[in-house]
Length: 79
Image (cartoon, rainbow, N blue to C red; front, side, top):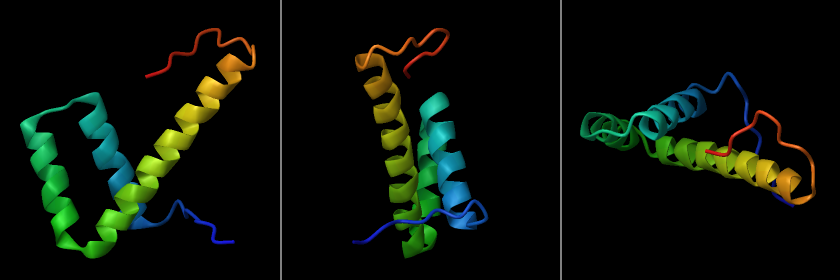
């Protein structure tokens, strides 16, 4: 079975995570262009962004799953 390992010291993953969060929190043409430029610099950046998006999706699925299981989400927001 193939597993993906994310090392917090991976600079490409860290950059992908930061750029994605910036785009998510403050969508703008300038932020989109910055992300596109970064993706074009190195083919490994595309994989790093894919990994960051996977982490984001899995974290969201875990939050939604706990809400569906009846766990109280007091104070949490799903965004």
